Length: 387
Image: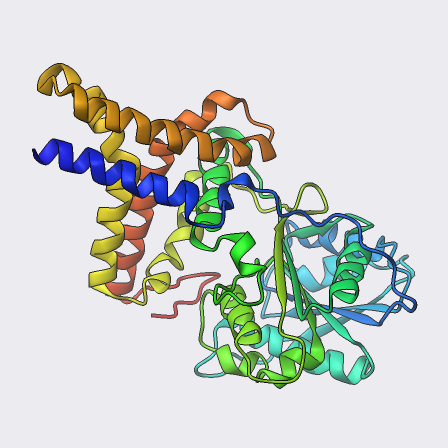
């Protein structure tokens, strides 16, 4: 009876995810082409950077090579780097027609996370450099933009009167760990924040991907600015919720999609530790530091990703054909919903069958995130802890 109940519950959960979450798993939200506006508005990119010597040159070079027709300036906030990040960035822009402004970061203010504090300084500098700029491109130091990316992002924002347009960058999926865990990360993000629902104005869901966010400056200021979320670790989704839920006359519609090659992250994910630290930094924050939510998440992930295979592989022991059939159906739906994301990353279809293995690792990372928080090392990133 217990085995049947577990199998039924697992299948019911997968049927809900298949049909009741906006068909997130289709992974169809893409940037596309929008008509060019009559006049291209001015844009300022704001890039927080802290010890990014390995990736900053390619990132800055990509901004300098943009084909955006309007005025465009890049503001890099060097947040106490000790590896020559600013000098490398300056060299990458030396012969470029676009303007690069480097702002030395001020000491971290109490109550702020490092990235948001750097972003705040960059936005303040952008206000001085380009007071008429209509949009801010909030992006990361490891992100490389295709020459057409900014033009297409602004065209969409203008055509659809959007306050925020965001692309989830294509992440590095090289190596054993990258190929196993990175497509799963993108899949889980879509499951948690279904893009089709986020993109509907009448729905409460809100999300953005911090690597690439084009934000209407007036909408951001009307919503309270980044000061309103200064202590948040999951700053991108917090910013999206701030703008979408603001009670202001400014535009509040947001849109998030998946990047093909328009926006790519150069952060190396070949080591397990790289992915583990990325997830463990914010997973318990996502659960509001609640032990009750952590327990619920652990049970839910076990039922979704581990229980079906456990019932299937233990069939010689329990001989329960009914439970086996239910578990096999759940596993089939799981694999089916993962296929579009696997294809997005150009991986062979058989790798969709490995989602339970990835699910186990993400469960362990979530538990690790809680343990770090309880030890007083929560949110550790770039030498800072936000416990």
